[in-house]
Image (tube, rainbow, N blue to C red; front, side, top):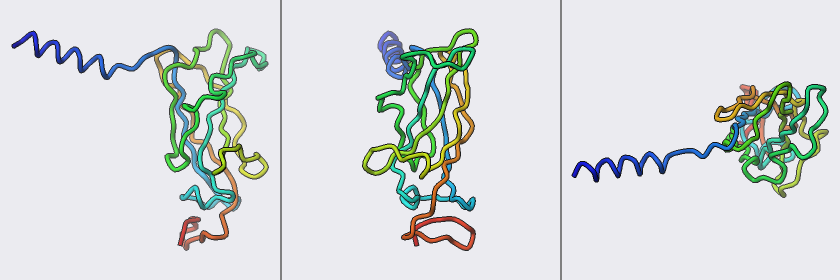
Length: 163
């Protein structure tokens, strides 16, 4: 009986292991109106925001992009539902060495899946971060700024939401 219990314990542990091929990057965001009011419903942003895309670009010590070092390019794991207000990659982001860093930024995606221009939904400038194998790299909350949609209302507490 004891070998069966030991086998089940090992099987459970193996099933919950996380494959580590690098580091992970965690982001969070909030949406504000141009007047500073919170937009708590991503559909109340104008235009509506469906997803937030993590953008990573590895750069050398002088800030120059390293060719081909864009691990999120074309990767669905870097697109997060807007309403989650947080997201994290798998542990497969290549680690940085020496004075290398990643420029970490975000882009808003519309309901059609296309990027919303930064002139319409403003996002912060890239933040430089190291990535260490087996560790999550956390980034401060990023603020996306846009207008409150006309079909939504500004509450007395200054929150843009659906009536």
